Image 1 (cartoon, rainbow, N blue to C red):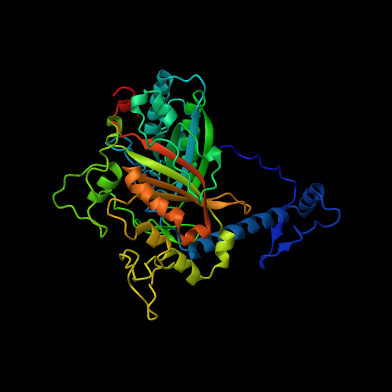
Image 2: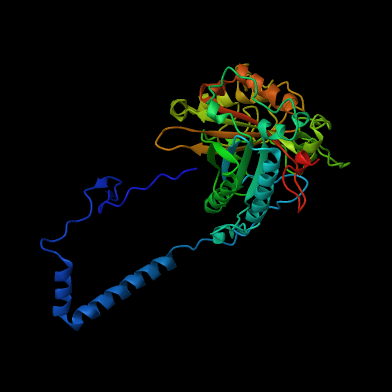
Length: 455
């Protein structure tokens, strides 16, 4: 990621008055005003000028203190700067972790001539530095370790592309690890569909996150080149209560149907494993199969799959649609996110319910109907989405990260139906698409991908 150079200050700036209109700029100085004249005037005034200056300073401080006392102080007791997410464990963090406020997705392509031994060396370096950064410590080569001291729930999640996995041997490469089939709604930018290694870097503090991706890129530039990258955001930390469903740039609640973290459903649908609980409680969708992870290669046990779609959103034409049209296309209300057949966000949609006219309340072509109606309990995903805005009206969209144990049985049945018919397609266009193998978590002393290269 590059930073555009900032223009030098020209000695003047645009100003805005209290009406919000641009003003003519700073008030002109009196004719003949100069620093020399100001000093001379102060000297002529003698001690009076000094007393006046001190008195004026005192008045200014008093006014500031009065304002500070009048304004309510911010409650910072919930500050999460020191908060950490464990790096080591049976699964990688950043999947089941409650989504953070900011994300940076960095896809890297191996340089020519890189061999398996080089990749192992690279992964060892990345693992050590990611482990340190996520726990609030700067890596060994970090020249600004102070920037890592407030991790703010920083996570680094590694995804492997086909090219990287092939270096470990052809038998290690799953058939599904490659480009998805092309859908009629796609208008893909080939540059956003590539990569051998994905770093999903998430956190609640953008400064910490920016420092982390810079450190990890420094680890990587001898081994790889940037294929593409994208920043994403959700609600800032503390803007709303924990556990609330986020909104996308269309104003829709996004992720209502996700399986609950820590549940039996999540374990089966995402990790392809059962928790072994005898008192497991399943959602209204029914009990998911316990064998969704059976097809994963041995080196991926404890891992999962990721389909990452970059979806452009046409906010200009969305703005022209009235609220009833938007809700009709989605099949849910915008305010509460409730299905049009219910009253609460988490009410199960009733696709047979009709209104007073005898018409179905939820259109069969709506987004919720196409993504859900008639599909079995195995056809579910865990979506971890982030908004993005490129600025200056040049584009906005959604980074749609879909985690599931089995792409063929879970993701593709939903995507094929949405690509065939979905009223929401009027305002959305997929412009990027990639598939990643998410390796399992590791123990301290191991490196990410060790089960692939040494298993």
